[in-house]
Structure formats: structure tokens, C-alpha cells
Image 1 (cartoon, rainbow, N blue to C red):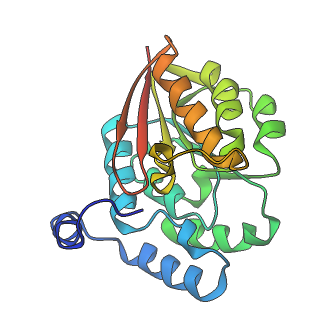
Image 2: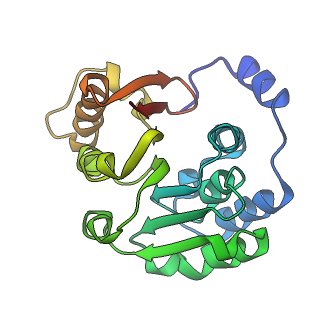
Amino acid sequence: MYFLPEKLDEYVVAHSQEEPELLQALTRETYQKILQPIMLSGPYQGRVLSMLSKLIRPKSILELGTFTGYATLCLAEGLQQKGEIDTIDVNEELLDFQRKYFDKSGYGSQIQQHLGSAIDILPTLDKTYDLVFIDADKPNYSNYFHLVIDKLNPGGIILSDNVLWHGKVVEPLNDKDISTKAVLDFNTLLRNDDRIETVLLPIRDGLTISRRK
């Protein structure tokens, strides 16, 4: 996930905003108790998400892929005073873990957890959003885009994570590698859809910003 030379990457992190203490605690407990802790956004990307949310000042945020709630809380930092987040994940075992940190953060009442497949849940959400964060199963990325684009307000932003997919997007494609093929197709979709304007940033494992026209 780290494409910069190590010393340069360390310099970038050292000269960016520090990770809040609550998120440090969330990270420690995730690594102690949860499988695949590498799925966390991490302190640097978390500060990027926080900064983008603060610039956008969303009233409504949709997140696909909650995991332990790290990115959720980073995005919540930019919410308007009465703003809300809908966050969707399939892992029932993480609900209580997420809720504990959501409530500790002070954003608890603004965060609505949804358990199940985003493919099934998204059509039931009768609202529109200023900011959408896609960080879930890669084979469904394009499906998620088609389901959320009409829920995105004009000028709204879609943030898509892992769009460089460990660098595999520029390597010869293995026909059996479904996830890499899905990410390649998704990146092409974002680039060519006339309803949005898109820029792909080489931040960690790749973060795309797409703005609804």
C-alpha cells in the first residue's frame, strides 16, 4: 500500500495532523481483537478523510464498509451540526465494537448503523447524500456506484478507497483475479461517466475523488 520511499512517507506523516487519542485507542483494540486489522484506514488516510469532510461540510454521509468505524469517525469530524451518517456493513460481530467508539466520540446519535448487504440496503434508503465513501467488497464497487449516483446531491462527492489495489492495477491481469478486474472496471467507469468529474490520488492504496456535476 505504500508507494513512496519509506523516508519520504515518514516525512509526509510527520508533517500532517496527528491522530486523535480516541482513534489511537480504536486502532489498538482493533489490532488486539479483530481479524484483518490492516483494513483500517490508518492515521494518515484518516486525517485525509477528515480534512476532505471538513472542506465539504456534509449534512449527510453514506459509508459502504464500516469495519471497526475508524473512517466513519474521521468523516464525522466534518459533519454539519445536525448532520447524519448512514454506514453499512455485513459483519454483525462488529456492531457493538463500532457503537462503543461511536458513542465515545460524541457523534453517536448522528451515526446510524445498517447491518447487511449494501446491495439490498441501499434501495431502502430514501434520502440523498453530500458525501459517499466506498470501502467495501471490490467485486461490487461498480454496482455500488450505480446504486448511489442518483442519491448523490449536485456537487456531492464520492470517495472511493483502494483504487490502486496494491499496485495490481498496472500489472498483467490474472483471469482468476476477480477483485483486480473489478477495480480496473470501476476506475474506468468513474473516468468515463459524464455525470461526474474524477481525480485519482495516489494516497496509500489509492483514493479517488468524484464530484457530481
